[in-house]
Image (cartoon, rainbow, N blue to C red):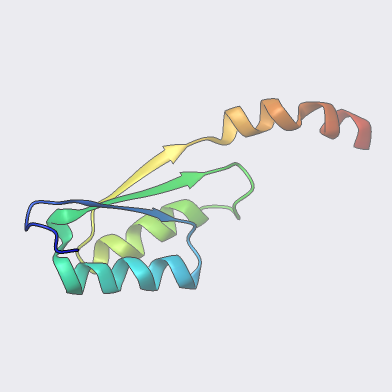
Length: 85
């Protein structure tokens, strides 16, 4: 199936090597303007890790949408968290 030059690709980035390399290869293959790159901070990332992911990928020319999902995750995990205390 051949796609047109205006079709965009959604790329979800965990911040790990696999998804970061995938995003970099996509950029080389189709151009940064056709990639919708999203990184969701789930609240379990290392300190400043999400910001580092965004900075690293922006350094190679990708625009990353950073979504803060930490509050939603923490609300879901709250019962587990109180058991550990």
